[in-house]
Amino acid sequence: MQVIESPEINRHPSPRLGTAAEVRMEMARLYREARTGQMEVSDATKLAYLLTQLATLMRIDDLEQRTAALERILKSEVKR
Image (cartoon, rainbow, N blue to C red; front, side):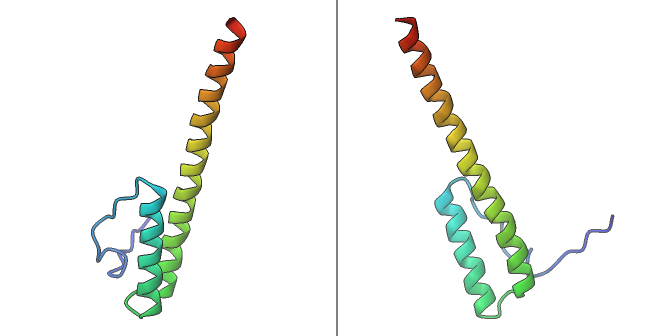
């Protein structure tokens, strides 16, 4: 498989994407760059798709953690 480097995609250092707010800020940056012609819309679309997937996984992870915490509480209540 051949990897094709895109100057628009690789122009910026990797952003911090540890929180939903950081993902949102990166998506906003992509939007601004696409709107102003600093980035190809097709490149921004691809990156925005990946960011959307990341945000979805963050929500799933959060829900899994909350569910596990509730299950632990319920188990401790039942043992009483």
